Length: 100
Ligand SMILES: [Zn+2]
Image 1 (cartoon, helix red, strand yellow):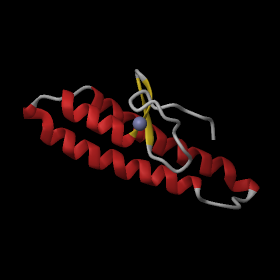
Image 2 (cartoon, protein in one colour; image 1 turned 90 degrees about the vertical axis):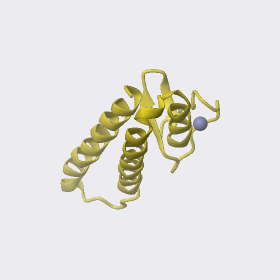
Image 3 (cartoon, protein in one colour; image 1 turned 90 degrees about the horizontal axis):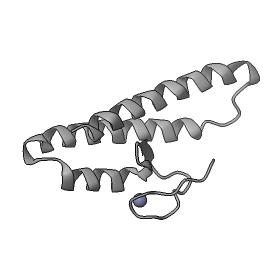
Image 4 (cartoon, helix red, strand yellow; image 1 turned 120 degrees about the horizontal axis):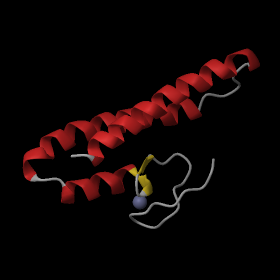
C-alpha cells in the first residue's frame, strides 16, 4: 500500500487503519470526524452522526476487501471493479461530510 500522512495528526497512515481523502489530503477516519464535529454547526450534528456511521461501514468494507487472498486471475478484474465501487461510495460520503 502507498504511504499516506494524515493532515490532522501528522502521523503516517498504517495498513489496516481507516482513512479517507478530502480536498486537504489524506486523513484518518477518526481525525476527520473529530475535525468535523468541531466545525459543523449544532443543527447539522445529527446529519454528521449518520454520515459518519455510513462512512465507517463503507471503510470497513473497503478494508475487508483488501483482506481477500488468492483471487483467481480471471476474477481479479471483477474484484478490482467491486473495490472501485466501494471506494467511490467512500468518496461520496466523505464529500457529504465535508460539505456539512
Ligand atoms: Zn490522523
